[in-house]
Length: 149
Image 1 (cartoon, helix red, strand yellow):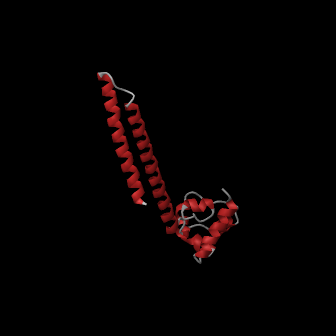
Image 2 (spheres, rainbow, N blue to C red):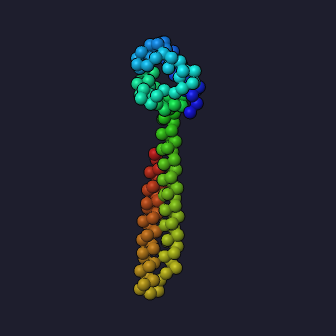
Image 3 (spheres, rainbow, N blue to C red):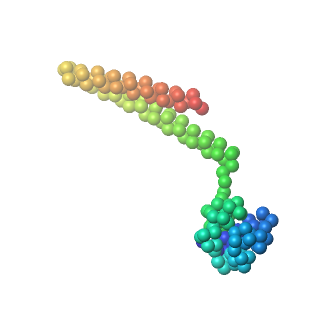
């Protein structure tokens, strides 16, 4: 914690609210010399009065101890962030769908390797069915992601 930075921040916020050191001290119930010591960076506010100090200065405790206003995200930044998240989600779905279609093709190719006996025919049929399901789910996932754009 930088006591000087915190003190400067307290002074800045106090002046923004058009309060004198005496007025702020009176509202908190302490001496104006204590306020002066904070603002000069000699001491920090006691933990028992931090909450009331923050309420009077209309700041958060993290802002007080950082010695600066929190950087708030404005609406445009929030919308841009949501847009990026949605684009990433769509890209993930396109990759997932494409991967499923590739797995479906691979399963179809593998099904042709089996055959000749009852067990091999069962495995071949199972792989062919699996390939169809994989390709259909892949097509659905990819197309739904592409149409959301």
